Length: 206
Ligand SMILES: C[S@@+](CC[C@H](N)C(=O)[O-])C[C@H]1O[C@@H](n2cnc3c(N)ncnc32)[C@H](O)[C@@H]1O
Image (cartoon, rainbow, N blue to C red):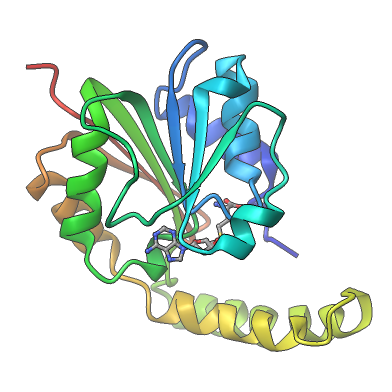
């Protein structure tokens, strides 16, 4: 149901953005832990990964390998000192951030000079037909399946809301401009199927 944004996609995006063995990582908006799991596998030591989420409920329910530290905090207020991590990741949580400048300023602050980031987000398709198909899939097909498969009765409603958050997402150009304004260099966006955006950037080494 996740349109191919599963573990393999997250792993590949993290590698493309420069995550390597031995790095320290903050995964912002850790949620259920899918990005943090892939990050822990790549760096080779779960104790090098910190997952951050503003929701105590998500922190309590995140399924991450033993050793990954979980903390409450938000993209706008990261609970770690400046210049202490090699890599910042964020998977499908950007749409919840009200102030990109503050959030990217925080990503910049906690990264060591030369540190890198990877931000994954679904982008509102540009073509009308693609938008209509995505809307139909997420507002009708997925809630219909969720009503039959999910154990919680509110899941169909949650999945209907999911499309609304994509519809209201910040445009990719604005995301890239905000990253550049925050001080990042080499800002790139890899887009697949017109929907999946993977933003990468680096804090200058000097
Ligand atoms: C779709 S989940 C992310 C799941 C996970 N990162 C993944 O890739 O599977 C979105 C998460 O963003 C969190 N979130 C909401 N507002 C946020 C904020 N301002 N900063 C960081 N995370 C936020 C939510 O609590 C939720 O756990």
